[in-house]
Length: 61
Image (cartoon, rainbow, N blue to C red; front, side, top):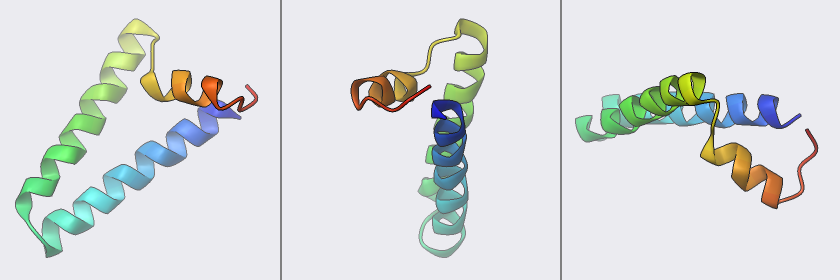
C-alpha cells in the first residue's frame, strides 16, 4: 500500500511541476529534477523519506 502511495505522490509532484513549469515559471522544473534525483537515490540506498513519513502516519505496508 505504501509503495503505491509513494509512486502516486511522486507522479503527482512530477506532473504538477511540469504543468507549473510550462504555464507559470521555468523554475518549477527544479522540483521535477529533485523528485527524479530522490527516486534515483532511493533505488540505490533503499531509503525513502516519504516511506518514513507514511510509517509514522501508520499507513499499512
